[in-house]
Length: 270
Image (cartoon, rainbow, N blue to C red):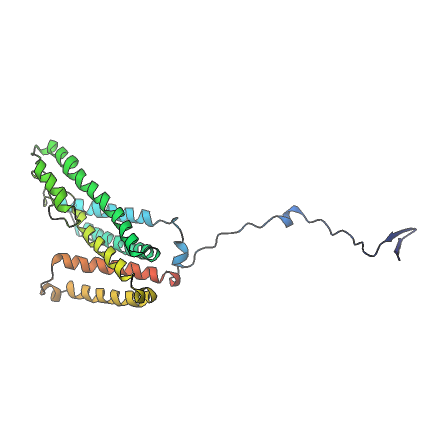
């Protein structure tokens, strides 16, 4: 039976199943709301992809190292340039530790070592060849020295394994005030490669991967003690090689970066 409604003198019949149409919504109400990118509040949130400034920071640190060594070679170094160079190297190793830890956790050991070798060795060999056969011969135009091809070949071959044992190319750079070194910052690469290998082996162990914070904290404490001993009068009285002292210092910063990666989900940015 139809329902009857009346307004004034008019009447309209509606079936019970009929309902009034809902009011039309405005376009503003139906438009999808724009999603905002959440502000990262943890270190892990800030480095979820490659869109970060770590590459730029590493470049600035590397250029600072080169500049500080230039002052050393020219005998113009001051305490400030020494500190700038040292802390640039320290920062570079800390960043490397952070990045390398993430790389190893994503890759099996063999592939990880292959990637590290590809990133380091070809560029290193190109630098050696460029110094021996381009920069060294050209330098003789400035001071009239005689470039020795056999010494250039020896420079490349002797240093190809990352441990720099021959610093100069006969008979170039004779007019340079400091020691004859064509590329002084190369000494850090052997330490960096050693850190790559040790980090890769350590993070391949199951008990280390499961308790990264614990074991990296133990390693960090060990490096701190070794640094205190090595760079104090007590360390000067011990037969610790100079290269080993630098390895202890740089290794500590590398492990610090690895520890920071392990704690990245708990480190606030604000």
